[in-house]
Length: 434
Image (cartoon, rainbow, N blue to C red):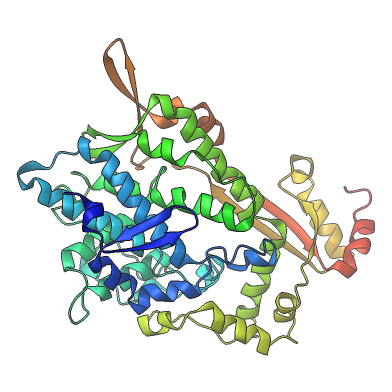
């Protein structure tokens, strides 16, 4: 069936052009739990550094829905449908697009800054019988809140999702949720589940395909650009003992590597920008020190009220307090050193001790991120399809891509900051150590 023909509505997107959607998708888009994302910025406080980066999770979610459908349509010819034929394909396409739309529905304000302030999973109205594992005493993630929100959509009156749809959407977002038989094998790991999950949350997923060019566009940088059309056209799927998984045509290997480097450079130049990290620290301290009274208690009603405009109003109300005033008045700390620089790693302890002895108030921030998980135990592989002399063989991407071999590691960003007024004194204190 022509899916574009069934679309009743469309919106214009500055990144992807026209995004079509159906009447049913429109009803879900208009639900308050999705509309709330208009009040959640995609990059949190990044607009204090990149003034154009005011785009929202709502824009991003529409883009991911659109690209998830496009990637699905690309790999559909290689998917077996069994006796259900097109009915299965329509169902799979529905849950893939809706997983793209709803994958960030549980995001707290200011991007990932508030993740550390979320309650334990046991506080959330989660469908506990859906999980293969659920540690109730662990801190919740935004994916947990997304699961709770999607489950709630299946209990509207009338319901916006069937229970099976809601469960399968959640399984594509969170791998601890077991999919239904219609999506997976007997243990929820086989069938088409692996490749559909890769479309939503994998190495070459619709999420990254959208946020990289979108973030680059609004931040006014070029690092996030790659050949999106070529990358999508290069995708297929192959059968493995664990179910269907994603495959990449060998001719597009360099297109993938360009995509990989776009992620790395956006992380280094935008997501972990030195000034942005400082402002994120201020915001976290403003909440932890009680300057602003803002909590996320786990209820969906509270989640609906978790909007950035409310947090910003609280910051302005507390604008004379230590941390809030630095955000309101845009007073970033000054970075002294990048301790992840090999030149300083061996002297890290001596540097920090010298600053403490000089009674200089410093902030030491350390972030660690893995660029890729391909090749790690338990991670569904992506294969590269190579055809030579009429014979096709499949090789794991993490063994074929030289760049992935080079960058498939944990990267550390470690900075030491001080107040602007203490900078010269800090420089003097480090004489002989740096």
